[in-house]
Image (cartoon, rainbow, N blue to C red; front, side):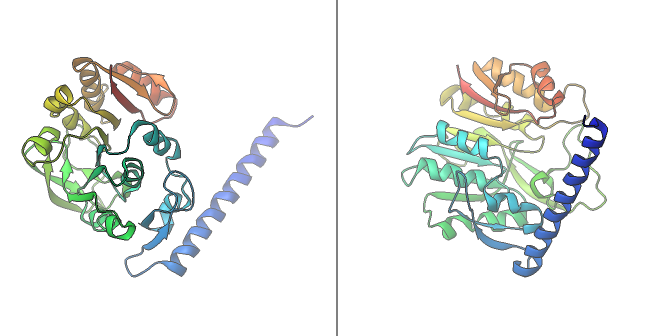
Length: 287
């Protein structure tokens, strides 16, 4: 009879060996192929964005190149979006969601991409030319609090985000901070002249609490679908969770947590999702 403890030790050892091999491979690719800025242009190998040209760092972004990053959610975009629609990618990082949006809306649609980090903006702004897209516009702009200028942590990779959010706990030891312009959702369409989006993705590292609150005119008028990743702060009831509950209730939206396929309506629902080790990500659709 197999000893469970011995089996667990064997599995753990195998996992650690596999993890080390992955790290060695990534480091090898980075040393062999990276350019002066530590990055390299690649073509996505599989998944919903197969064939898209991206610029990545092999050390911690190889999943984008392989096509395994967030594949389930990227496929979900294909079910939500329609050719000819308008999509906003708010908090784009290197642009994989924007690429999936562009693939679905096609040449007759429009994609607006928003990225605050100077480093990330520089590379995501290369996407349209590298892929021959004439209907994708990249904005060096944070999305969250309206009519504001914010301090933004720019060197935290996909976790780069606003520094001074209420209740946010951030180790500032090695953080590079830049000052960026920040816009609200209604400000984008009512003052900056962008078209009403049919779909928005919000990945704003706690600033979604502002984005959900200051899009009231758009939510009521256009009623777009919204994919929002909720981020915690130190509060027992995080501000972003409260804003999401208020948004769903006030504008009569139906919420589904996309990883678990679970209906969610309240802060308690969002917290229960996170209890199973999942970052709560809600697809909100008009009821």
